[in-house]
Amino acid sequence: MKRIVIFASGSGSNAENLIKFFQNSDHARVTQILCNNPQAKVLDRAKNLEVSALSFNRVSLYKTDDVLNILKASKPDLIVLAGFLWKFPEHILNAFPNKVINVHPALLPKFGGKGMYGMHVHNAVVKNKETETGITIHYVNENYDEGATIFQDKCDVLPTDTADDVAAKIHELEMKHFPKVVDQLLHE
Image 1 (cartoon, helix red, strand yellow):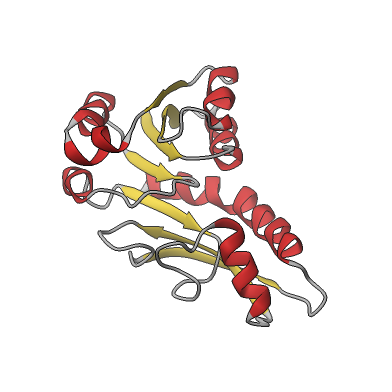
Image 2: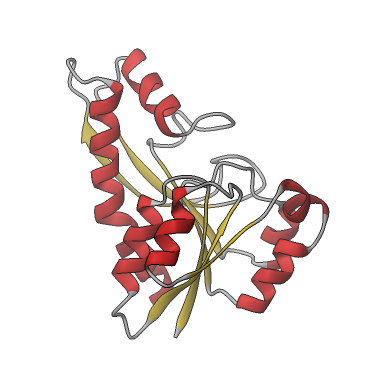
């Protein structure tokens, strides 16, 4: 059975979607949620779905091997960033080469980089009068949103769309594609 560990920072809708997608799988399971925000709703979602969940702080992630040791004990086949807002540390990337992926709410390389997440991205898409946007699922490297692209899908942005409209379209793409791409990666 393949093991998936999810890092999240917020509400956890993508994490919940992944947990539910793999609940009845004979191939893979989400075995743990790791979160940098002890108040995040994702921790409640994990508890309700009977998935182990832990929160950690900056020191545990960046200055010690605490989080790395948790991961080593968990033995994940894939580490999935699902709305995780901190830069992922190089020492963990080095310990799990080509095993860390992220979903970004835009068509990278557009609208990527530090500070470009969630509504910041959707507001920028609308402000820039883009005619399309989408999601990018990519490997994580030492730079924000610069890892190799695994998958992209697009949606139209209408001249009348607000950032909230764009967010809803992106959420739909994430819910549809993210679990399937994770599953495909675990079959490779």
